[in-house]
Length: 314
Image 1 (tube, rainbow, N blue to C red):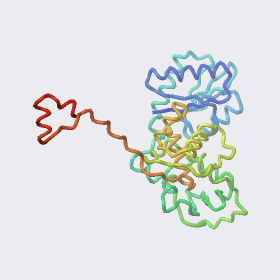
Image 2: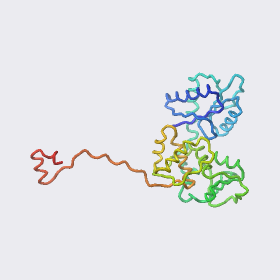
Image 3: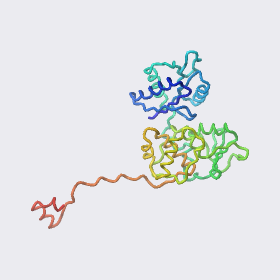
Image 4: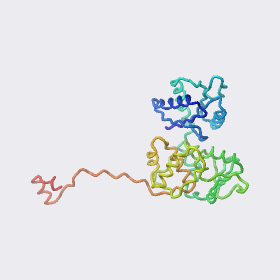
């Protein structure tokens, strides 16, 4: 499994230490990538305990149930309960051991079960009966109007939009055709539909099933808005615009810079926004040509075999 580790407000030495530890995880058959914190979901956060930005990142990570490693300076406050506090100059071996413990213990926490993945909201919105339709999605007291005609997602408040994004890939949503919550768009907070769906599916990508096998293409460039750290996804969209391809081919084309879950989440978002077009089933591998020469039958075949000419005539 691929793991995403985020860092927030670390000094250069601490950042290098974390990246070295992530590389050493390969000895435990753990594939991990370290990137700067961008607000999206991850498997583990390493942040500076004495920095305001680091504290903000840790607060959001704790709210999501993401494991947190707090790197402390000489005069930094201790980490909160549930955080694993280490010194900035922690030995690499100890940091590696801590990362292994946290990643393996949390491996199943964010994974979708086979029985409920097809009921995830992005999968429902990407279904043929709802693609391109105006629908209302609701989770508890939060309702969001998905409006493809205007290209926007509406909710009573910005907090509702953020809450919807954070929980978009979790079970429990209801979907109704039309404006079931009677929201008044002119009085609502809104976000661009495609940036909203892309950000929401990326945050919960570990909860989504693989995208169905097939050939897909984009005929319209999606609106990525001002989404941070979306360069890799834009490369994927560019590949889909240039030619039709399969999810596996997209993942292979990006190498180790993009995980399968990122590719799948983007495809679910593009399908839910009704931009992704099917270009047919995935191509089947052509059978290798047989090296066996066709046998000759009849009188000429018998004569050829009799005089040892079968190879030449075959």
